[in-house]
Length: 322
Image: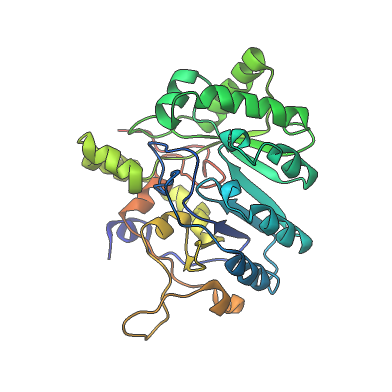
């Protein structure tokens, strides 16, 4: 039994409410905290054939929400095709957007497309100051992100259309209070740039992939992992996103979450030797409920402090840091 299972106990899946589709690792940015190791040179993208098989499976379920992520999900050739196919099923769509994609050739009209289809946008903005954002996401990213948010506001995002921002700490520390950071973001972005948005989601940096490499390079990996262990909050466990979210990779494999996906902790068919990966279209939707969730040390990243999920903090009153 791994250390997380020893602390949290056995986790089992509840009713699936969200299908998160990771369409690949291609991205126009190379962020230091990225758990996907995404970047401009990556070749892994979801094909139209895989999209069709994923959406055909979704049509057999009552899963109400689809969360599209990447990489930069909009960068794949069939992103708009995916959106239209999912929307034809009447499902709510969330797009995890890095904002700077709007300035890439061929994507200049992306804000209008998202607004036309009333897609919920969850946008990365790890701080409201240029220095911190550019240090984490690359030179000039802050200025382009502000320009993108102003374009979205002009299209009705932040008022009649849902626009949420994502905060990741710069460096090896836990996020601060989500409520306090949200208030600061609202005040600073409104005062400095006239930008409005709905919610701020604080998300803990996960000690995997590029961020793990950064931690190892700086000699902070074990220290950061210990920080997560020391701040384990049992109150966060019932709200962990792996309980009600199903993750599917760019090839169609099934995972408990996007972090497990990046660690290749995919579902396997029972009894097969060697183990055979489970693809979404081979999965009976009725067999998901109650399945044991695969966990490991990285799961402390979702259960430390106020907890962390794709929807931000899980609990209001986190355990104090030692």
